[in-house]
Length: 201
Image 1 (cartoon, one colour):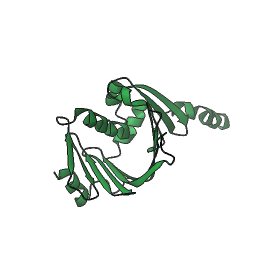
Image 2 (cartoon, rainbow, N blue to C red; image 1 turned 90 degrees about the vertical axis):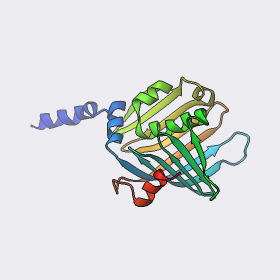
Image 3 (tube, rainbow, N blue to C red; image 1 turned 90 degrees about the horizontal axis):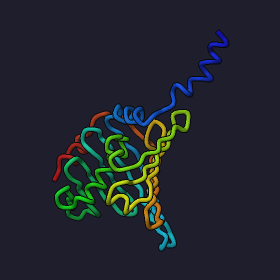
Image 4 (tube, one colour; image 1 turned 120 degrees about the horizontal axis):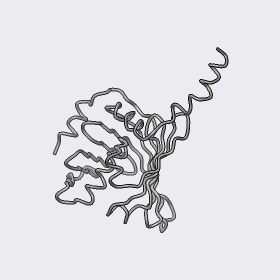
């Protein structure tokens, strides 16, 4: 029995090596994820990086809510048909696939990133997925479609149970890093306020 236990210890990491399909399945089983974010954008011509922070929500069947609280309030809602952005209480800006197809394509990809949607990712990127052990993973995406290949050199995502870190490396040499923390899976359904956000406009 001791030898058997030792064999399990030796080989279980190989058996449980995570794949992109398993990661997508893991994310699919999380109907609603809420988290805090801290974003740092380093622009080569600016002496100081630009920092922002706030909260985000990704709902499997509805879309993405992105609520920046600092340095100024900005609310973003993204679903399958439109993106609604409200900055500092101004009238909402509504972007659809019809009135701004490139912007909508990029923002639509955000959902694919958060949900590890393999089909969408494979349409737009060359994929390098690495199992880092103990459930941790690293996904490097290299754009193969326009306009993404004109904007980004690569996009790196890392995490474990959740998506923890996104790094956007753009063709201008600028760098955007987003760190997610305090992930929450409950409540598993949207609050009344969150539902109204998706239904508005």
